[in-house]
Image 1 (cartoon, helix red, strand yellow):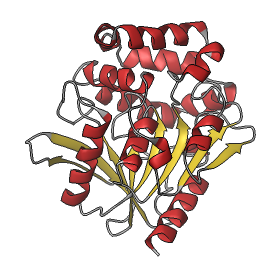
Image 2: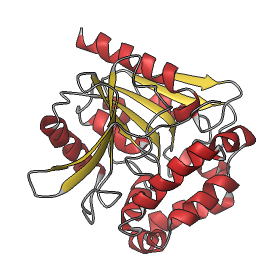
Image 3: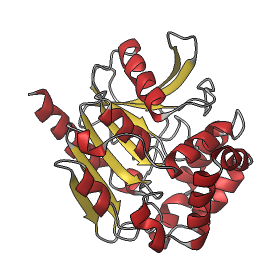
Image 4: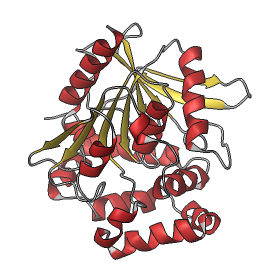
Length: 292
């Protein structure tokens, strides 16, 4: 039986210079090559990559709770730039150097912001939430999503208050209702379901404000320059993934110099757990090449 996820080897929190705490979880050897994971919507540090993926390539995978999620102190009004600064500080505190980064789903724009800020050495966007507020996407967005994007643009404070009402059960129902069968086979796997639901429960442990802030930032126009990213970037989407990007990352890849777009045949949006090994192998190769 395939194991899609496993428990972290190490859990902890680090105190930033301003006194806030960032929660993190680690997999793989402590002396491995640092790889930071920016998790998807409302999922806490508990949900990593595919089971055992960090071990064989010698990666030290560090999943980080964004402020207000999981074990991280809230930071009302935070921005993408604030998260990049947090990751820079955490990298010093945890001895990560200039880590490679994986951005999954709603964590993708935060990972891209870190790349734009020069905080990371290489980036893999995996089933990443695209910039749905881009005008080019407006005609092709589903009506419900288009309405949410317009709401965020017209009334960001009101939209944030609306998203604050979401909880772990809401997110689970949304994922299950909007996923293709190939992804449902992963999400319904008994072992994965327990891990995923635990990550959601911890993600909402402080309420919905952390998720709401993430969502308003991700659904608005991104304020960082994608064409200024100078590190290697791989962009991964499953062929059957229709929920994360209207064009499977084609426009996103075109805006980042040298970005490589990979569309996996027959796969959906659960690539982080079904194709963790090739994602991580490519990322570590890119990071090593940059270091050379």
